[in-house]
Image (cartoon, rainbow, N blue to C red; front, side, top):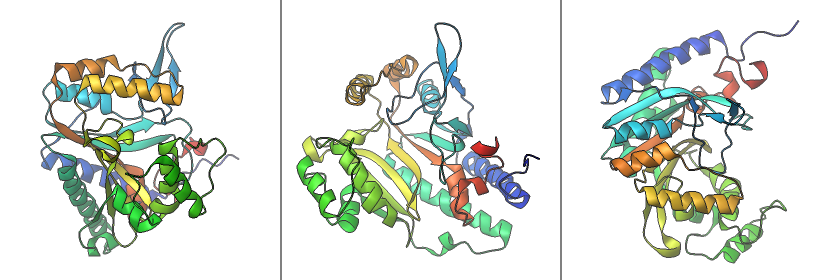
Length: 329
């Protein structure tokens, strides 16, 4: 007989339900209001590294399951919303493993007027309060509560600490040499002039595995070439994207931006990424229209709820905190 049972225990699922309710209460009381943007969209994610699920609609049109509620939420910001959040399902094709499920729960929020630095303060307060709530519900003292303030490292500082060298000002051939000196094996498909490819390889192999063990760690000020939808500060090789990621036990929990508001700059990035990736990336016309109408200065964060719950409960896979992962769906 086919096994019908959930991969998470009912006790964990009851706790999950309480923590979903707690999360909504936390954001409501912090001055955000919950929104509910479409799961099915006419516009495709513009990040070439994220693959959406495609849904046929007609002979000439296809739709996409959202990989993030970002586009819809930014349209609401341009229409006058100030502090908003969304807690719900998103979908990413091909992402499956201990830390990934093609369908997962994302917590995403935006606040008008805040920078990425202020959002880091807010993320820290939320994560600590989340851990405190788990302690209250389970009658335990969570380890996150015994840590001092979360650590904060720039991208360059993280590389210097864990890979032995800063990298932002270095030419690509020196980054390749650093990887080889550290014994990092590169796939044959990684070209010698692919700067971001080598940086991401070093990050994954030599930096990320060391982040967030003594205490949760923010990494911020990424290379400008990895800005995605973040603002860029500075000029030339050492320009940085005003974005951050939070790591706990070597695992990325969230990604935050001081948001790009310039539609012309976004069009340029889309064209560059499409050329570099050799993918057809259509322009998100509704998002661009919202930006042209006046997207206010703001910051936003996308946080993987399943991962945060997994780490907070000491589990080793997201399948232990969701009822039916991909293979059981």
